[in-house]
Image 1: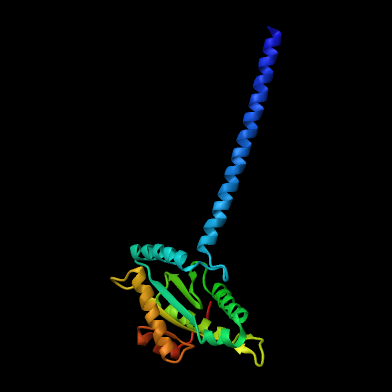
Image 2: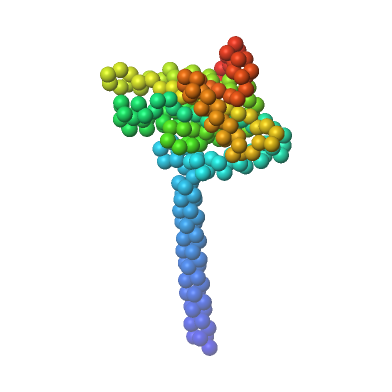
Amino acid sequence: MGAASLVFASFVVGATRKLSDAMEKAFRLTREMEYAHSIASHAAQTDELTGLKNRRAFFQQAKQTYEHCKRNRLPLSVLMLDIDHFKKVNDGHGHPMGDRVIKSLALFLKQRLRKTDYIGRYGGEEFAVVMPDTDLKSAYSVLDEIRRRFAEIHYPAQPVDLFCTFSAGVVELGEGDDALMMASQADEALYLAKKAGRNQVHTLREDIMLAKRHTPVDVV
């Protein structure tokens, strides 16, 4: 009887140890799978060159922010930026230099915009920004100052150093607007900036641009 009890106890101990090992392995595997999923999810939402949100992820975030601002009656501004004459940069200085300029602008925006602002690489040399709780005049002033400072950056190149600029369009949330409509309007304002000669920020409201020409505002 004693021997049988000893054998049974030994069996229970062994089974418990195996169960514990199996549970530990299962827990470790679950954590590894969750980590891998997290990495894959981040990669699917991130632009590889700049580390910004890609176009799809940006629109998802933009719609959420739009709904929040609409629901709480908060101002919201949407910005579209495009590097001027970018094809000439690639053709004249090579694609590595083009990539460097794109990464430079991405970093410039991240450093000078707020953490609550969402930046995305819209495609190629084009970027989009959502600025919650920000009216049109404030967004215009901040972006125009960023534009001016970005134009001062020089990139060592042959035969002369390279300077780059961007054009931009800005719109503010209005009655009856939706997220896609705002993006379309910002793109229209960007087109106006390009048409007017590039290296400038445009909005669909002329009074904002006229006021900015007389009252420069620094980036905070």
